[in-house]
Every structure is written in structure tokens, then in C-alpha cells.
Length: 356
Image (cartoon, rainbow, N blue to C red):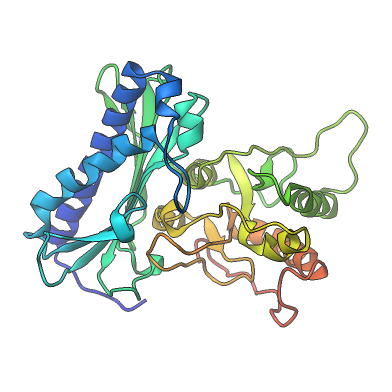
């Protein structure tokens, strides 16, 4: 990523704009959940392409243009990227000839858990200098993610980062309006024993293969299970932003989403590749990196993706560099044995510092 010099006032204005957008989406979605039934919010609104769009998703999408467009011209123009937009993006202000910025947004990451009031969802955003279709998540200079709480939950968290300045977080009390500082502290333990560590396997098709890889990892790292004991734990939190949060806050030690690698397994079973993680699901990764979480692709390269709505992305997250050194060779060996990772890709040497 090339270094882009941006006026401090512009950075602060972009950050305030995105934080304001996310708070508006959070409040609007909570209000919709209060007023409308689960059945109404879970109606499939558009199943034509990509992920299924539910009625609850439209609540957040409707706020995007109205919140961003009035500020776009003053900021030099914004390409807004989001799944619900026609073609996946729109140039704001409309009719302009170019833009200085690309803003990618996932208005609700974790729709299904939220609409059934099972688990918080997240609003995710990142801002990068506009480079057209060449713009990538690694170009992000700002990232924000805001928790959309369930109705019985009165606290929600807001996280943000400016590249090179660390990660920050606050906790919001929606009953009193009070805001307090929140510390982000990924686990510093070098092992997964008695902790949460997992491979994502949300949907049918190749869950048995992912579970076999997960078991292989656990046995290699912890040894055989002892009678009556649990050596480690997992949680299938169907929100990528939520998974990154769990790594940042110290709840999880390792998480990998390898769904795109399952394509040959599914093809051998006569099945297509189903829903995978997309760049908008991962667009807040700058915050995790600034907090010290190590994010890579399955081959060990730094995690990155084009800043669009289409790419299928596999990712691996370690709470610290020691965990990466212990887990990555075992994970890559398990993938190579199954023909899911190229033999030519040698295990990467872990960095000496966190967050690389």
C-alpha cells in the first residue's frame, strides 16, 4: 500500500461521518426490531443474487444514501460500496465525474442472528483513497464497526481505527445515553487450551470436512481428549465483524473461515460453492490489526481483498503472533494433505511483532 497523505481535518471529518452513519443505522435497526415482529423482519426481500436480503437489511440500507450524499461533494466525492446498491456501488454526489474516496459498508453483518434476537449484529465500514477497481482493503485509512444490540441488551460497543494510530473503543448505554471507554486486549496466551478456537462452518455442504480439519488441529495442538474433560471450545458466531470483535476483546484465540477453499470438496459432491465471506464482511479488519490481531489468508500472506461486494475471501485470525507460530504450520499441513492449499506455498515465517 502506498502512503497517502491526507489532511488531519479531512481524516477527522471522514471518521465523524462514518461513526455518525453507523450510529444512525444502529438506532434505526433497534427501533425497527422494537416495532416489528420477527416474522416481518425475516421476510426474504431479494433472493436474486448474492446473499439473501431480508426486510431487516433494508432498514440499514435506506439510511446509507441519505446520510452520505449531503457530505460527498465537500469531501471530494465518494464511491459508496454496499451490497444493496444497484451494481454494488454508486458515485456520490450523483452526476459527478470522480471521487476522492471509496467507502465500503455492511449495514448489518449478522442479520439472521439479530432478526431472531439471538445475538448482536454489527455495522461495518472502511474508507480508502479511491483507486477504482484497484482499491483494496489494505488501502483503508479508517475503519469503524458498531454493535447493533438485541432488544434485551442495553449496552453496545463501537470500535474504530485510523491507520497507524491504534484501535479505540467505547461502550454505549442506550438507556442512559452514557458512553465509557472500552479496552481492546486480544489474548496474549500462546495456546488454545481451555480457550475458544474454531473453524467457521455455518452452512451445510462441507461442514464434515471443516470439522475434520478442526479436530485435526485440536488433537495436534492439545493431544487426545481426556475422559470427562473439555480441552477447548468453539462458537459459531455467524458475523465476521463479530468474530473479529471476539478476537480483539480477548474472548477468542483463533478463528478461521475457509469456506472458499471448500469448492473442490463441494464439486466432488456435485454441489456448488455456497455463501462465503465477502470484502464488506471483513472491511473493519484495520481495527483488528491496529489492536494487535494477526490476520492472514490461508497461505500465510497478510489478509487483503478488493474493496468490492463480489470476492470470496478465506481468512485466518490469531489473537497474537505466538498463536500463529503454533497453529499456522499445523493448519497449512492439514489443508495440503487434503489438496486445499498449493504444495508450493511453504509455511510462512511468523513475524516478530503483532498485527503484521
